[in-house]
Amino acid sequence: MEIAFWDPYQDSLISTRYWVESLVFQAQKTLQSAAFCRVASESA
Image (cartoon, helix red, strand yellow):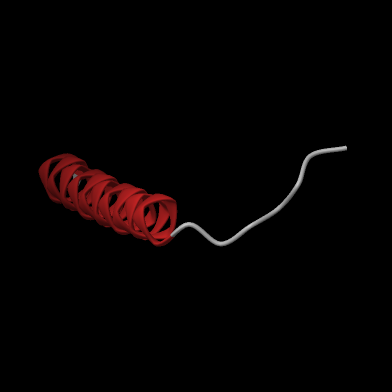
């Protein structure tokens, strides 16, 4: 059993990583939808 204690540095590290990952996720979704629109307009 590990002892859980609040570490501000660790906490900011986790929130920064979460922010970066959500940013990357948004970018991937945007790129995918842009590519899909381009393919759809070319095939139309």
